[in-house]
Image 1 (cartoon, helix red, strand yellow):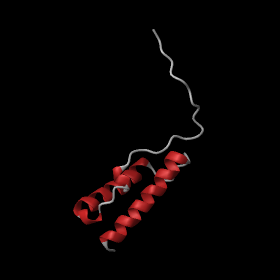
Image 2 (spheres, rainbow, N blue to C red):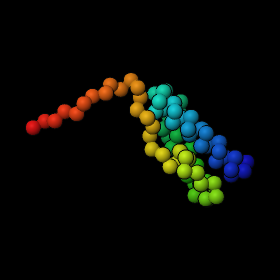
Image 3 (cartoon, one colour):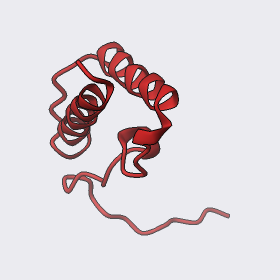
Image 4 (cartoon, rainbow, N blue to C red):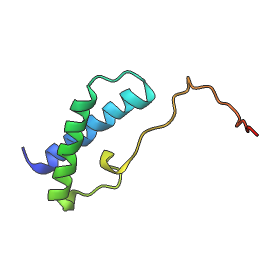
Length: 78
């Protein structure tokens, strides 16, 4: 498999897992498996900088908050 194909495959897979974890709260892989995929993508991107993409999962942190979280105002204690 060519590097560009594997990079695209890993990005799509990690984006899917991010969606499942952050938006759907239904992860399908363990943290260790996710980390393995993430490190593989990081290594491929470092070794092949011509495939740099600012939208890669390696350049983002977290996701949008779940809608099930209740919004609350700040409380100040004295």
